[in-house]
Image 1 (tube, rainbow, N blue to C red):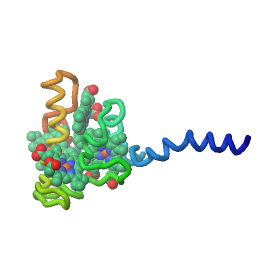
Image 2 (cartoon, rainbow, N blue to C red):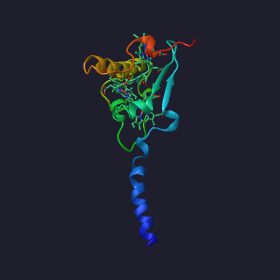
Image 3 (cartoon, helix red, strand yellow):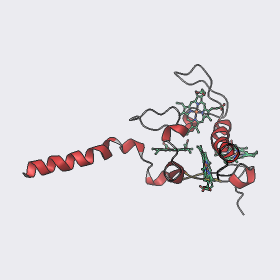
Length: 128
Ligand code: HEC
Ligand code: HEC
Ligand code: HEC
Ligand code: HEC
């Protein structure tokens, strides 16, 4: 009986374990990017939960079960080659702007729904 119960608990926990790589770590729920244009505060957790955006939508090279790579591992200061790709990875700021601003613009203009900022100064906040 005890063994059965243990087995049952194990089965309940299993899906969570298998999914462990697909959850956002606590210290990455909100990510801040500091740069010369001003600080960008990105609510990673909100984007992936309430907003229902799939991990792969941003982590576009990610395969389930593999560790998540940083954008900057491939997107450098300049266009750079990446193993396994025939096309160069666009530079960091282009990758971010196309992804972040791109979705906000599309959501506002095409879907006519509320979205995040598309204007420089509303995303990059200068320190007071
Ligand atoms: C709207 C875009 C977006 C979505 C959706 C998203 N992420 Fe991210 N994630 C990012 C960005 C941007 C970073 C910062 C990457 C960097 O620092 O280069 C990041 C960083 C991470 C990191 C830290 C990587 C490191 O080593 O620093 C993990 C882990 C992660 N994301 C997991 C997830 C998981 C799991 C999901 C889905 C539940 C998800 N992300 C959904 C954009 C997104
Ligand atoms: C393993 C390497 C790798 C990682 C990690 C990676 N990218 Fe990319 N990315 C590429 C390559 C290579 C391309 C160009 C080929 C393509 O479009 O698939 C690209 C293309 C893009 C494009 C299309 C650019 C355009 O011209 O419109 C965007 C946007 C983008 N990446 C954003 C991101 C973001 C944001 C992250 C992190 C959340 C990220 N990438 C992580 C390799 C990577
Ligand atoms: C696939 C679509 C999508 C992508 C990709 C995306 N966003 Fe958003 N963003 C949204 C939506 C939807 C909202 C919420 C609009 C609302 O409900 O007010 C939002 C809101 C925001 C806000 C307002 C503050 C907040 O979180 O409510 C900021 C800032 C923001 N996004 C930054 C970013 C950055 C930085 C990136 C890229 C790393 C990014 N977003 C990528 C769809 C997206
Ligand atoms: C949706 C949010 C968003 C909007 C809107 C936006 N940016 Fe950015 N921008 C980012 C993110 C995220 C990065 C990547 C930050 C990093 O890597 O530190 C970035 C990077 C940059 C960088 C590169 C910084 C560096 O050190 O390489 C510059 C310059 C910049 N943005 C200028 C602008 C200008 C000018 C506009 C308006 C035309 C603008 N941004 C609009 C989010 C945004």
